Length: 578
Image (cartoon, rainbow, N blue to C red):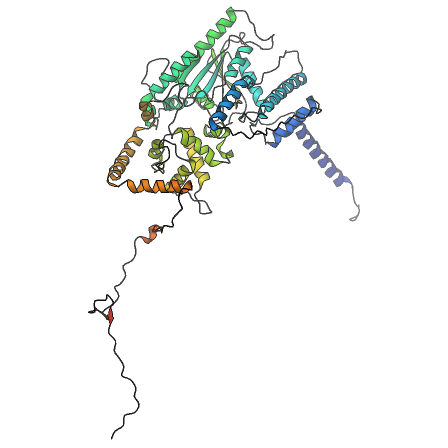
Protein backbone atom coordinates (compact mmCIF):
# COMPACT_ATOMS: atom_id res chain seq x y z
CA UNK A 1 0.00 0.00 0.00
CA UNK A 2 1.57 3.28 -1.06
CA UNK A 3 2.10 6.30 1.12
CA UNK A 4 -0.47 8.41 -0.67
CA UNK A 5 -3.11 5.67 -0.92
CA UNK A 6 -6.14 6.19 1.42
CA UNK A 7 -7.97 3.51 3.38
CA UNK A 8 -11.55 3.50 4.78
CA UNK A 9 -10.71 1.77 8.07
CA UNK A 10 -10.12 4.98 10.06
CA UNK A 11 -13.25 6.63 8.77
CA UNK A 12 -15.31 3.55 9.62
CA UNK A 13 -14.07 3.65 13.20
CA UNK A 14 -14.86 7.35 13.49
CA UNK A 15 -18.33 6.78 12.02
CA UNK A 16 -19.00 3.94 14.49
CA UNK A 17 -17.85 6.11 17.40
CA UNK A 18 -20.18 8.94 16.34
CA UNK A 19 -23.10 6.55 16.11
CA UNK A 20 -22.48 5.30 19.64
CA UNK A 21 -22.34 8.87 20.93
CA UNK A 22 -25.61 9.71 19.18
CA UNK A 23 -27.30 6.62 20.60
CA UNK A 24 -26.13 7.54 24.10
CA UNK A 25 -27.57 11.03 23.76
CA UNK A 26 -30.91 9.70 22.54
CA UNK A 27 -31.03 7.23 25.40
CA UNK A 28 -30.35 10.03 27.88
CA UNK A 29 -33.15 12.11 26.41
CA UNK A 30 -35.49 9.14 26.71
CA UNK A 31 -34.63 8.75 30.41
CA UNK A 32 -35.22 12.45 30.90
CA UNK A 33 -38.67 12.19 29.31
CA UNK A 34 -39.44 9.36 31.70
CA UNK A 35 -38.64 11.75 34.56
CA UNK A 36 -35.56 9.86 35.67
CA UNK A 37 -34.16 12.92 37.45
CA UNK A 38 -33.79 14.36 40.94
CA UNK A 39 -36.96 15.85 42.37
CA UNK A 40 -36.99 19.63 42.71
CA UNK A 41 -39.55 21.68 44.56
CA UNK A 42 -41.36 24.20 42.36
CA UNK A 43 -43.22 26.98 44.18
CA UNK A 44 -42.81 29.87 41.74
CA UNK A 45 -45.30 30.41 38.92
CA UNK A 46 -42.59 32.08 36.81
CA UNK A 47 -40.46 28.94 36.74
CA UNK A 48 -40.02 28.11 33.05
CA UNK A 49 -39.92 24.37 33.68
CA UNK A 50 -43.24 24.45 35.52
CA UNK A 51 -44.84 26.53 32.77
CA UNK A 52 -43.63 24.22 30.01
CA UNK A 53 -44.74 21.14 31.92
CA UNK A 54 -48.15 22.64 32.57
CA UNK A 55 -48.54 23.49 28.87
CA UNK A 56 -47.60 19.94 27.84
CA UNK A 57 -50.10 18.44 30.25
CA UNK A 58 -52.87 20.77 29.05
CA UNK A 59 -52.12 19.98 25.41
CA UNK A 60 -52.13 16.26 26.06
CA UNK A 61 -55.16 15.95 28.35
CA UNK A 62 -57.45 18.81 27.43
CA UNK A 63 -58.38 20.67 24.31
CA UNK A 64 -57.38 24.28 24.04
CA UNK A 65 -60.75 25.47 22.73
CA UNK A 66 -61.88 27.07 25.97
CA UNK A 67 -63.68 30.43 25.90
CA UNK A 68 -61.74 33.40 27.16
CA UNK A 69 -62.63 34.59 30.66
CA UNK A 70 -65.04 37.47 30.91
CA UNK A 71 -63.00 40.30 32.41
CA UNK A 72 -65.11 42.85 34.26
CA UNK A 73 -63.77 46.32 35.02
CA UNK A 74 -65.09 48.05 38.09
CA UNK A 75 -65.51 51.74 37.26
CA UNK A 76 -66.87 52.69 40.66
CA UNK A 77 -64.79 55.47 42.13
CA UNK A 78 -65.76 54.94 45.76
CA UNK A 79 -62.78 54.74 48.05
CA UNK A 80 -62.50 51.82 50.48
CA UNK A 81 -60.87 52.27 53.85
CA UNK A 82 -58.19 49.77 54.96
CA UNK A 83 -60.53 48.36 57.62
CA UNK A 84 -63.22 47.70 55.02
CA UNK A 85 -60.65 46.11 52.71
CA UNK A 86 -59.47 43.73 55.42
CA UNK A 87 -63.07 42.85 56.29
CA UNK A 88 -63.87 42.07 52.65
CA UNK A 89 -60.72 39.98 52.40
CA UNK A 90 -61.71 37.94 55.46
CA UNK A 91 -65.18 37.33 54.01
CA UNK A 92 -63.74 36.20 50.67
CA UNK A 93 -61.25 33.89 52.39
CA UNK A 94 -64.00 32.33 54.49
CA UNK A 95 -66.15 31.90 51.38
CA UNK A 96 -63.41 30.11 49.40
CA UNK A 97 -61.75 28.28 52.30
CA UNK A 98 -63.14 24.97 51.07
CA UNK A 99 -61.30 25.37 47.74
CA UNK A 100 -57.87 25.20 49.40
CA UNK A 101 -57.64 21.43 49.29
CA UNK A 102 -54.73 19.04 49.14
CA UNK A 103 -54.68 17.24 45.76
CA UNK A 104 -56.25 13.79 46.10
CA UNK A 105 -54.83 10.68 44.51
CA UNK A 106 -57.39 9.15 42.14
CA UNK A 107 -58.71 5.67 42.86
CA UNK A 108 -56.42 2.89 41.67
CA UNK A 109 -56.16 -0.90 41.68
CA UNK A 110 -53.15 -3.21 41.42
CA UNK A 111 -54.43 -4.38 38.02
CA UNK A 112 -53.91 -0.91 36.45
CA UNK A 113 -51.00 -0.37 34.11
CA UNK A 114 -48.30 2.20 34.81
CA UNK A 115 -49.39 4.40 31.88
CA UNK A 116 -53.04 4.39 32.98
CA UNK A 117 -52.18 5.22 36.59
CA UNK A 118 -49.80 8.01 35.50
CA UNK A 119 -52.42 9.48 33.17
CA UNK A 120 -55.10 9.50 35.89
CA UNK A 121 -52.79 11.17 38.41
CA UNK A 122 -51.74 13.86 35.95
CA UNK A 123 -55.32 14.59 34.97
CA UNK A 124 -56.44 14.86 38.62
CA UNK A 125 -53.47 17.08 39.45
CA UNK A 126 -54.12 19.40 36.51
CA UNK A 127 -57.76 19.71 37.55
CA UNK A 128 -56.58 20.74 41.01
CA UNK A 129 -54.22 23.30 39.50
CA UNK A 130 -57.04 24.78 37.45
CA UNK A 131 -59.24 25.18 40.53
CA UNK A 132 -56.49 27.16 42.26
CA UNK A 133 -55.90 29.22 39.12
CA UNK A 134 -59.50 30.42 39.34
CA UNK A 135 -58.85 31.61 42.88
CA UNK A 136 -55.74 33.50 41.73
CA UNK A 137 -57.89 35.43 39.25
CA UNK A 138 -59.92 36.85 42.14
CA UNK A 139 -58.47 40.29 42.95
CA UNK A 140 -59.79 40.17 46.51
CA UNK A 141 -57.77 37.03 47.33
CA UNK A 142 -54.03 36.62 47.75
CA UNK A 143 -52.95 33.04 47.17
CA UNK A 144 -49.51 32.26 48.52
CA UNK A 145 -46.91 30.24 46.57
CA UNK A 146 -47.51 26.49 46.81
CA UNK A 147 -45.94 23.27 45.56
CA UNK A 148 -46.51 22.78 41.83
CA UNK A 149 -44.46 19.64 41.21
CA UNK A 150 -46.61 16.52 40.84
CA UNK A 151 -43.78 14.17 41.88
CA UNK A 152 -43.50 15.90 45.28
CA UNK A 153 -47.21 15.39 45.90
CA UNK A 154 -46.83 11.73 44.90
CA UNK A 155 -44.39 11.32 47.78
CA UNK A 156 -47.06 12.68 50.13
CA UNK A 157 -49.70 10.29 48.77
CA UNK A 158 -47.54 7.26 49.42
CA UNK A 159 -46.61 8.39 52.93
CA UNK A 160 -50.27 9.00 53.84
CA UNK A 161 -51.33 5.60 52.50
CA UNK A 162 -48.54 3.64 54.19
CA UNK A 163 -48.72 5.34 57.59
CA UNK A 164 -50.90 4.27 60.48
CA UNK A 165 -50.23 7.49 62.42
CA UNK A 166 -49.57 10.72 60.51
CA UNK A 167 -47.37 13.22 62.40
CA UNK A 168 -47.54 16.83 61.21
CA UNK A 169 -44.43 18.68 62.38
CA UNK A 170 -45.08 22.38 63.13
CA UNK A 171 -43.07 25.24 64.59
CA UNK A 172 -44.01 26.01 68.19
CA UNK A 173 -43.70 29.77 67.65
CA UNK A 174 -46.67 29.79 65.25
CA UNK A 175 -48.29 26.33 65.10
CA UNK A 176 -51.40 27.34 63.17
CA UNK A 177 -49.34 28.82 60.33
CA UNK A 178 -47.73 25.43 59.64
CA UNK A 179 -50.86 23.36 60.17
CA UNK A 180 -52.90 22.12 57.18
CA UNK A 181 -56.41 21.10 58.33
CA UNK A 182 -57.31 19.65 54.94
CA UNK A 183 -54.45 17.15 55.20
CA UNK A 184 -56.12 15.74 58.31
CA UNK A 185 -59.36 15.44 56.34
CA UNK A 186 -57.54 13.66 53.51
CA UNK A 187 -56.00 11.17 55.94
CA UNK A 188 -59.51 10.37 57.23
CA UNK A 189 -60.72 9.87 53.66
CA UNK A 190 -57.96 7.33 53.03
CA UNK A 191 -58.74 5.43 56.24
CA UNK A 192 -61.28 6.50 58.82
CA UNK A 193 -59.10 5.08 61.62
CA UNK A 194 -56.04 7.18 60.72
CA UNK A 195 -55.20 9.95 63.13
CA UNK A 196 -53.03 13.04 62.77
CA UNK A 197 -50.77 14.25 65.57
CA UNK A 198 -49.27 17.73 65.83
CA UNK A 199 -45.61 17.49 66.81
CA UNK A 200 -44.93 20.99 68.16
CA UNK A 201 -41.20 21.26 67.48
CA UNK A 202 -38.89 23.97 68.91
CA UNK A 203 -41.04 24.10 72.05
CA UNK A 204 -37.95 25.04 74.07
CA UNK A 205 -38.31 28.57 72.64
CA UNK A 206 -41.65 29.06 74.43
CA UNK A 207 -42.15 29.99 78.09
CA UNK A 208 -44.14 27.57 80.22
CA UNK A 209 -47.10 29.96 80.49
CA UNK A 210 -47.38 30.18 76.69
CA UNK A 211 -47.19 26.39 76.35
CA UNK A 212 -50.05 26.09 78.85
CA UNK A 213 -52.21 28.40 76.74
CA UNK A 214 -51.48 26.46 73.58
CA UNK A 215 -52.20 23.19 75.37
CA UNK A 216 -55.58 24.50 76.49
CA UNK A 217 -56.37 25.60 72.94
CA UNK A 218 -55.40 22.24 71.41
CA UNK A 219 -57.47 20.36 73.99
CA UNK A 220 -60.50 22.57 73.32
CA UNK A 221 -60.19 21.88 69.57
CA UNK A 222 -59.74 18.11 70.10
CA UNK A 223 -56.27 18.13 68.50
CA UNK A 224 -53.74 15.42 69.34
CA UNK A 225 -50.44 17.17 70.11
CA UNK A 226 -47.04 16.71 71.74
CA UNK A 227 -44.42 19.35 72.65
CA UNK A 228 -40.97 18.42 71.40
CA UNK A 229 -37.52 19.89 70.73
CA UNK A 230 -35.28 18.12 68.22
CA UNK A 231 -32.37 20.39 69.09
CA UNK A 232 -32.62 19.61 72.80
CA UNK A 233 -32.99 15.88 72.15
CA UNK A 234 -29.94 15.83 69.87
CA UNK A 235 -27.88 17.75 72.43
CA UNK A 236 -28.96 15.33 75.19
CA UNK A 237 -28.01 12.33 73.03
CA UNK A 238 -24.57 13.78 72.27
CA UNK A 239 -24.03 14.90 75.86
CA UNK A 240 -23.83 18.58 74.97
CA UNK A 241 -25.30 21.60 76.69
CA UNK A 242 -27.59 23.98 74.88
CA UNK A 243 -26.18 27.45 74.30
CA UNK A 244 -29.52 29.20 74.80
CA UNK A 245 -30.00 30.07 78.48
CA UNK A 246 -33.83 30.03 78.37
CA UNK A 247 -34.05 26.53 76.92
CA UNK A 248 -32.30 24.91 79.85
CA UNK A 249 -34.90 26.26 82.23
CA UNK A 250 -37.85 25.10 80.09
CA UNK A 251 -36.87 21.48 79.53
CA UNK A 252 -37.90 19.92 82.86
CA UNK A 253 -39.92 22.62 84.54
CA UNK A 254 -43.30 20.90 83.98
CA UNK A 255 -44.47 17.37 84.79
CA UNK A 256 -47.88 17.81 83.16
CA UNK A 257 -48.03 15.47 80.11
CA UNK A 258 -49.81 18.19 78.12
CA UNK A 259 -47.19 20.92 78.66
CA UNK A 260 -43.96 18.98 79.19
CA UNK A 261 -41.34 18.74 76.45
CA UNK A 262 -40.95 15.07 75.58
CA UNK A 263 -37.60 13.37 75.40
CA UNK A 264 -36.45 10.89 72.78
CA UNK A 265 -37.50 7.69 74.59
CA UNK A 266 -40.80 9.21 75.74
CA UNK A 267 -41.72 10.37 72.23
CA UNK A 268 -40.94 7.00 70.65
CA UNK A 269 -43.10 5.24 73.23
CA UNK A 270 -45.95 7.73 72.67
CA UNK A 271 -45.81 7.35 68.87
CA UNK A 272 -45.77 3.57 69.07
CA UNK A 273 -48.69 3.42 71.50
CA UNK A 274 -50.83 5.77 69.37
CA UNK A 275 -50.07 3.81 66.19
CA UNK A 276 -50.80 0.46 67.84
CA UNK A 277 -54.13 1.79 69.06
CA UNK A 278 -55.03 2.78 65.49
CA UNK A 279 -54.08 -0.69 64.19
CA UNK A 280 -56.14 -2.34 66.91
CA UNK A 281 -59.20 -0.25 66.01
CA UNK A 282 -58.75 -1.05 62.32
CA UNK A 283 -58.56 -4.77 62.96
CA UNK A 284 -61.50 -4.80 65.34
CA UNK A 285 -63.78 -2.70 63.14
CA UNK A 286 -64.84 -3.17 59.55
CA UNK A 287 -62.28 -2.04 56.97
CA UNK A 288 -64.02 0.83 55.12
CA UNK A 289 -61.04 2.01 53.10
CA UNK A 290 -61.40 3.47 49.66
CA UNK A 291 -62.66 0.53 47.51
CA UNK A 292 -59.47 -1.49 47.80
CA UNK A 293 -57.26 1.34 46.55
CA UNK A 294 -55.15 1.41 49.70
CA UNK A 295 -53.06 -1.49 50.75
CA UNK A 296 -53.35 -1.77 54.52
CA UNK A 297 -50.52 -2.36 56.94
CA UNK A 298 -52.28 -5.16 58.79
CA UNK A 299 -50.07 -7.77 57.12
CA UNK A 300 -46.87 -6.15 58.39
CA UNK A 301 -45.65 -6.85 61.88
CA UNK A 302 -44.64 -3.26 62.67
CA UNK A 303 -46.61 -0.02 62.77
CA UNK A 304 -45.70 2.89 60.49
CA UNK A 305 -45.49 6.52 61.63
CA UNK A 306 -45.22 9.10 58.83
CA UNK A 307 -43.78 12.61 59.22
CA UNK A 308 -45.11 15.42 56.99
CA UNK A 309 -45.13 19.21 57.09
CA UNK A 310 -43.75 22.41 55.64
CA UNK A 311 -40.09 22.75 54.66
CA UNK A 312 -37.60 23.79 57.34
CA UNK A 313 -39.79 22.92 60.34
CA UNK A 314 -37.47 20.19 61.59
CA UNK A 315 -38.77 16.90 60.12
CA UNK A 316 -35.32 15.58 59.22
CA UNK A 317 -33.85 16.84 62.50
CA UNK A 318 -36.61 15.02 64.36
CA UNK A 319 -35.89 11.79 62.47
CA UNK A 320 -32.17 12.05 63.23
CA UNK A 321 -32.87 12.76 66.90
CA UNK A 322 -35.21 9.77 67.20
CA UNK A 323 -32.86 7.41 65.38
CA UNK A 324 -29.88 8.62 67.41
CA UNK A 325 -27.65 9.24 64.38
CA UNK A 326 -27.69 11.20 61.14
CA UNK A 327 -29.88 9.37 58.64
CA UNK A 328 -31.28 12.31 56.64
CA UNK A 329 -29.61 15.47 55.39
CA UNK A 330 -30.27 18.63 57.39
CA UNK A 331 -29.71 22.20 56.15
CA UNK A 332 -31.19 25.63 56.83
CA UNK A 333 -32.34 25.81 53.18
CA UNK A 334 -35.87 24.44 52.66
CA UNK A 335 -36.32 21.41 50.43
CA UNK A 336 -33.32 19.27 51.41
CA UNK A 337 -35.30 16.00 51.50
CA UNK A 338 -36.17 14.89 47.94
CA UNK A 339 -37.75 11.43 48.39
CA UNK A 340 -39.64 9.74 51.19
CA UNK A 341 -37.59 7.17 53.09
CA UNK A 342 -38.38 4.55 55.70
CA UNK A 343 -36.34 3.81 58.83
CA UNK A 344 -36.93 0.69 60.92
CA UNK A 345 -36.60 1.55 64.58
CA UNK A 346 -37.51 -1.87 65.97
CA UNK A 347 -39.60 -4.92 65.17
CA UNK A 348 -42.70 -2.98 66.20
CA UNK A 349 -42.03 0.56 64.87
CA UNK A 350 -41.03 2.04 61.49
CA UNK A 351 -40.66 5.75 60.67
CA UNK A 352 -41.36 7.32 57.27
CA UNK A 353 -40.01 10.76 56.31
CA UNK A 354 -41.73 12.81 53.59
CA UNK A 355 -40.26 15.78 51.66
CA UNK A 356 -41.46 19.17 52.83
CA UNK A 357 -44.44 20.61 50.97
CA UNK A 358 -45.72 24.17 50.75
CA UNK A 359 -49.50 23.93 51.03
CA UNK A 360 -51.74 26.61 49.43
CA UNK A 361 -52.97 29.16 51.92
CA UNK A 362 -54.72 32.53 52.26
CA UNK A 363 -53.42 33.34 55.73
CA UNK A 364 -50.02 34.77 54.84
CA UNK A 365 -48.09 36.69 52.23
CA UNK A 366 -44.90 35.81 50.42
CA UNK A 367 -42.83 37.96 52.78
CA UNK A 368 -44.23 36.14 55.82
CA UNK A 369 -43.36 32.80 54.24
CA UNK A 370 -39.76 33.97 53.70
CA UNK A 371 -39.53 35.21 57.29
CA UNK A 372 -40.96 31.91 58.54
CA UNK A 373 -38.35 29.88 56.62
CA UNK A 374 -40.82 28.22 54.25
CA UNK A 375 -39.32 29.87 51.17
CA UNK A 376 -35.52 30.20 50.76
CA UNK A 377 -33.98 33.47 51.89
CA UNK A 378 -31.68 33.52 48.86
CA UNK A 379 -34.71 34.02 46.58
CA UNK A 380 -35.70 37.17 48.43
CA UNK A 381 -35.91 40.22 46.18
CA UNK A 382 -37.57 42.76 48.47
CA UNK A 383 -35.54 43.10 51.65
CA UNK A 384 -37.50 45.69 53.59
CA UNK A 385 -40.86 43.93 53.29
CA UNK A 386 -39.50 40.71 54.81
CA UNK A 387 -37.62 42.56 57.56
CA UNK A 388 -40.78 44.53 58.35
CA UNK A 389 -42.47 41.23 59.24
CA UNK A 390 -39.70 40.61 61.77
CA UNK A 391 -39.97 44.14 63.16
CA UNK A 392 -43.75 43.76 63.60
CA UNK A 393 -43.44 40.49 65.54
CA UNK A 394 -40.39 41.12 67.75
CA UNK A 395 -40.74 43.86 70.40
CA UNK A 396 -38.53 46.93 70.07
CA UNK A 397 -36.67 46.42 73.34
CA UNK A 398 -35.89 42.81 72.41
CA UNK A 399 -34.28 43.89 69.13
CA UNK A 400 -32.21 46.56 70.88
CA UNK A 401 -31.08 44.15 73.60
CA UNK A 402 -30.15 41.28 71.27
CA UNK A 403 -28.21 43.36 68.73
CA UNK A 404 -27.15 46.10 71.19
CA UNK A 405 -28.31 48.89 68.93
CA UNK A 406 -30.44 52.00 69.46
CA UNK A 407 -33.44 52.25 67.17
CA UNK A 408 -34.90 55.69 66.38
CA UNK A 409 -37.73 56.60 68.75
CA UNK A 410 -41.17 57.50 67.37
CA UNK A 411 -42.02 61.17 67.04
CA UNK A 412 -44.23 62.80 69.63
CA UNK A 413 -47.18 62.98 67.22
CA UNK A 414 -46.77 59.30 66.23
CA UNK A 415 -48.04 56.28 68.08
CA UNK A 416 -45.40 55.54 70.71
CA UNK A 417 -46.06 51.80 70.59
CA UNK A 418 -45.56 51.48 66.84
CA UNK A 419 -43.00 48.90 65.69
CA UNK A 420 -39.77 50.15 64.16
CA UNK A 421 -39.69 50.62 60.43
CA UNK A 422 -37.65 48.25 58.31
CA UNK A 423 -35.51 51.10 57.01
CA UNK A 424 -34.71 52.22 60.57
CA UNK A 425 -33.91 48.66 61.63
CA UNK A 426 -31.64 47.95 58.66
CA UNK A 427 -29.75 51.25 58.85
CA UNK A 428 -29.11 50.89 62.57
CA UNK A 429 -27.94 47.29 62.08
CA UNK A 430 -25.64 48.25 59.18
CA UNK A 431 -24.18 51.14 61.16
CA UNK A 432 -23.40 48.92 64.16
CA UNK A 433 -21.87 46.11 62.04
CA UNK A 434 -20.17 48.27 59.43
CA UNK A 435 -22.06 46.78 56.46
CA UNK A 436 -21.37 49.07 53.50
CA UNK A 437 -22.04 48.21 49.86
CA UNK A 438 -19.73 49.05 46.97
CA UNK A 439 -21.86 52.13 46.24
CA UNK A 440 -21.06 53.55 49.69
CA UNK A 441 -24.63 53.05 50.96
CA UNK A 442 -25.62 50.66 53.78
CA UNK A 443 -25.63 47.03 52.60
CA UNK A 444 -29.27 46.30 53.43
CA UNK A 445 -29.29 43.01 51.49
CA UNK A 446 -26.59 41.45 53.66
CA UNK A 447 -28.15 42.84 56.83
CA UNK A 448 -31.63 41.58 55.88
CA UNK A 449 -30.38 38.04 55.26
CA UNK A 450 -28.55 37.93 58.58
CA UNK A 451 -31.57 39.28 60.47
CA UNK A 452 -33.90 36.73 58.86
CA UNK A 453 -31.52 33.86 59.68
CA UNK A 454 -31.38 34.98 63.31
CA UNK A 455 -35.17 35.21 63.35
CA UNK A 456 -35.60 31.68 61.99
CA UNK A 457 -32.89 30.15 64.21
CA UNK A 458 -34.40 31.65 67.36
CA UNK A 459 -31.79 34.30 68.18
CA UNK A 460 -34.60 36.86 68.00
CA UNK A 461 -37.14 35.32 70.41
CA UNK A 462 -40.79 35.64 69.42
CA UNK A 463 -44.02 33.64 69.46
CA UNK A 464 -47.67 33.87 68.49
CA UNK A 465 -50.54 33.46 70.93
CA UNK A 466 -53.59 31.20 70.38
CA UNK A 467 -56.65 32.83 68.78
CA UNK A 468 -58.54 35.00 71.21
CA UNK A 469 -55.64 35.25 73.69
CA UNK A 470 -53.14 38.04 74.27
CA UNK A 471 -49.64 37.94 75.68
CA UNK A 472 -49.22 39.07 79.26
CA UNK A 473 -46.37 41.18 80.57
CA UNK A 474 -44.77 38.20 82.27
CA UNK A 475 -44.82 36.26 79.01
CA UNK A 476 -43.14 39.09 77.11
CA UNK A 477 -40.46 39.35 79.77
CA UNK A 478 -39.77 35.63 79.67
CA UNK A 479 -39.07 35.76 75.95
CA UNK A 480 -35.90 37.81 76.44
CA UNK A 481 -32.93 35.77 77.72
CA UNK A 482 -31.35 36.68 81.03
CA UNK A 483 -28.01 37.76 79.63
CA UNK A 484 -29.78 40.20 77.30
CA UNK A 485 -31.88 41.53 80.17
CA UNK A 486 -28.87 42.18 82.39
CA UNK A 487 -26.85 43.61 79.53
CA UNK A 488 -29.48 46.11 78.55
CA UNK A 489 -30.67 47.16 82.01
CA UNK A 490 -27.67 49.35 82.73
CA UNK A 491 -27.97 51.11 79.40
CA UNK A 492 -31.66 51.78 79.93
CA UNK A 493 -31.09 53.15 83.44
CA UNK A 494 -28.33 55.44 82.25
CA UNK A 495 -30.51 56.72 79.41
CA UNK A 496 -33.38 57.41 81.82
CA UNK A 497 -31.09 59.32 84.17
CA UNK A 498 -29.80 61.48 81.36
CA UNK A 499 -33.27 62.06 80.00
CA UNK A 500 -34.55 63.47 83.33
CA UNK A 501 -32.03 66.35 83.26
CA UNK A 502 -32.60 67.37 79.62
CA UNK A 503 -35.54 69.69 78.91
CA UNK A 504 -38.16 68.14 76.65
CA UNK A 505 -39.86 71.40 75.63
CA UNK A 506 -37.43 72.10 72.78
CA UNK A 507 -37.91 68.62 71.35
CA UNK A 508 -41.68 68.95 71.51
CA UNK A 509 -41.57 72.31 69.70
CA UNK A 510 -39.34 70.87 66.99
CA UNK A 511 -41.70 67.94 66.48
CA UNK A 512 -44.73 70.22 66.27
CA UNK A 513 -42.94 72.48 63.80
CA UNK A 514 -42.06 69.51 61.57
CA UNK A 515 -45.68 68.32 61.77
CA UNK A 516 -46.95 71.75 60.65
CA UNK A 517 -44.49 71.86 57.77
CA UNK A 518 -45.46 68.36 56.61
CA UNK A 519 -49.15 69.31 56.54
CA UNK A 520 -48.61 72.69 54.86
CA UNK A 521 -49.53 74.71 57.94
CA UNK A 522 -46.22 76.54 58.05
CA UNK A 523 -43.32 77.39 55.81
CA UNK A 524 -39.95 75.82 56.24
CA UNK A 525 -37.31 78.15 57.58
CA UNK A 526 -33.73 77.88 56.58
CA UNK A 527 -31.78 76.85 59.60
CA UNK A 528 -28.04 76.68 59.62
CA UNK A 529 -27.20 73.08 60.32
CA UNK A 530 -23.86 72.37 61.83
CA UNK A 531 -22.21 69.47 60.11
CA UNK A 532 -21.02 66.74 62.43
CA UNK A 533 -17.32 66.49 62.80
CA UNK A 534 -15.77 63.42 61.29
CA UNK A 535 -14.21 61.02 63.82
CA UNK A 536 -10.75 61.34 62.30
CA UNK A 537 -10.88 65.16 62.66
CA UNK A 538 -11.80 65.26 66.32
CA UNK A 539 -8.18 64.97 67.49
CA UNK A 540 -6.17 67.76 65.83
CA UNK A 541 -2.47 68.26 66.15
CA UNK A 542 -1.27 71.05 68.40
CA UNK A 543 -0.22 74.06 66.36
CA UNK A 544 2.54 76.46 67.27
CA UNK A 545 1.37 79.79 68.54
CA UNK A 546 2.03 82.50 66.02
CA UNK A 547 4.14 85.49 67.01
CA UNK A 548 1.77 88.41 67.25
CA UNK A 549 4.02 90.69 69.28
CA UNK A 550 3.89 93.33 66.56
CA UNK A 551 0.31 94.06 67.66
CA UNK A 552 -0.23 96.60 70.43
CA UNK A 553 -3.25 97.72 72.39
CA UNK A 554 -5.48 100.52 71.28
CA UNK A 555 -5.78 103.36 73.67
CA UNK A 556 -8.52 105.04 71.66
CA UNK A 557 -11.15 102.60 72.93
CA UNK A 558 -12.57 101.77 69.49
CA UNK A 559 -11.67 98.12 69.76
CA UNK A 560 -9.30 98.09 66.78
CA UNK A 561 -5.72 96.92 67.19
CA UNK A 562 -2.90 99.35 66.55
CA UNK A 563 0.05 98.43 64.36
CA UNK A 564 3.53 99.84 64.78
CA UNK A 565 4.44 101.56 61.54
CA UNK A 566 7.93 102.80 60.75
CA UNK A 567 7.34 105.74 58.44
CA UNK A 568 9.97 106.35 55.77
CA UNK A 569 10.87 110.02 55.28
CA UNK A 570 9.70 111.54 52.04
CA UNK A 571 12.25 111.98 49.23
CA UNK A 572 12.62 115.72 48.68
CA UNK A 573 15.50 115.58 46.25
CA UNK A 574 19.20 116.38 46.68
CA UNK A 575 20.22 118.42 49.64
CA UNK A 576 21.76 121.72 48.77
CA UNK A 577 24.79 122.66 50.78
CA UNK A 578 25.26 126.39 51.03
